Amino acid sequence: MGNTALENQIKRQSNRRMLELLEISKRFDGVFAIKDVSFSISLGSITGLIGPNGAGKTTLFNVITGFLNPENGTVNFQNRPLTGLSPFKIALSGIGRTFQNLRIIKGLSVEENILLALSEGRVIRSIIKAFERRDSKVEEEKVKELLEVVGLSDKRYDLAGDLSYGQQKLLTIACCLALEPRLLLLDEPVAGIAPEMIEKILGIIKELPSKGKSVIMIEHNLDAIMQVCDRVIFMDAGKKICEGTPEEVRNDPRVIEAYID
Amino acid sequence: MRILEIRELETGYGKKQILFGLSVEVRKGEIVALIGPNGAGKSTVLKAVCGLIPTWNGEIRYEGMPINGATPAQNVARGITFSPQGNRVFSDLTVMENLEIGGFQLPKKEASVRIEEVLEFFPALKDHLRKDAGKLSGGEQQMVALARVLIPKPKLLMLDEPSLGLSPNLVGDVFEKITEISREAGVSIFIVEQKVREVLEICHRVYSLKLGKVAFEGPPEELKEDKAKLKQLFL
Image 1: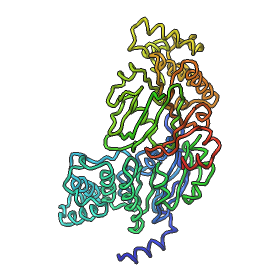
Image 2: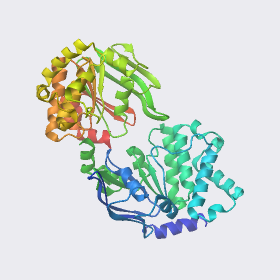
Image 3: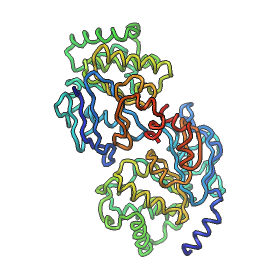
Image 4: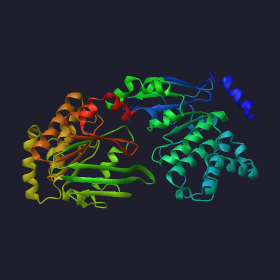
């Protein structure tokens, strides 16, 4: 599909709900980590999920991706319920995620990490197809493309463990993209890295909607959130406190109250 | 006179950099607060000072002497103690045993004397010495934690969120006790806190961190009176 056709399709569908959370609750030892959280994400949007420690942001990612089952509520993705599905089935449905603790294999090369993600994608897409012969030419093209997207082409044969922390984050994004998700959940994509690398990663994230992908990102770097997100959801103590444009959320008195307690 | 001087500190965990050239100082007798949003690096500063994590670049000086690379035990012996976030007490040990752990580097006799002295600051604990510390209320446990880090007779006491998980009235009690420790024991205090309003009431100076750097340094009054500034620092 040409760029214009894809953009038109995105425009047509931009009001369509890509992901919908309805009254999600999750408790740990009787304490609510998330309580009655509802929101929806539209196609091609970048949504920031912010809030103090313990707000329930990562728990919410774990619920959406099936690592945790909610006690109440429903998660719908592209109008289909995800609740109760295993993480791999949710990944199969088109939701990719990155983790705060990167989860790359440091003893493998950059290329091998991406190949592994590609093979995971193959397994996920179909158990039967998993046994098909690897099409090395297609994989070669795919690896090349992903390395170009994240700007790691010159690191292809380096050990992942030898990359800088920022480059390792880029690699996790490449591995996530290898699964061809429609929605990416990025957990602190720019935490702990130098400012110039932050700009690079934000540049990559900003481009994702033009490729037909939606993003939800958790981030404590609010300047980064303000720079790339078109919607922001603010959570505190397991609840959604407010939602709006970055400017609306920044100016909501409840937000500053929660931060300074 | 400076008791602690941190210059251009860079550190982090593994390859993840948390502090990007941070400079902070604590003068003798001061209560200095370290505030800022999550992920700013507040706890990391305290961990680097007490030697729990290595420094990458920059310098940490205590009483004028560089202490980069010193172990926590060496720092305790020098007079730096640290009460980390959350893990207040050894729950299965009695209150007395918790206090004895605070004096593990001291000769036994000296430790006993110090426990007696410190208990004068915390008279309410005297009735609970034989109880398991885990059975005390959250506020009492915090008092045990504060008492324990005072046993080695520190000159610099570092506290990471002493108010964490406490009800508002207990937070008041803990902050009052911290002020008392500073005033009467002459200990310099470096405190990380999320309860910004409360800590601004008791500190002499405040640093606000943002993404591993100092975004504000000054007297607490400047922030108490300027809500817009506070918002800018946190959002």
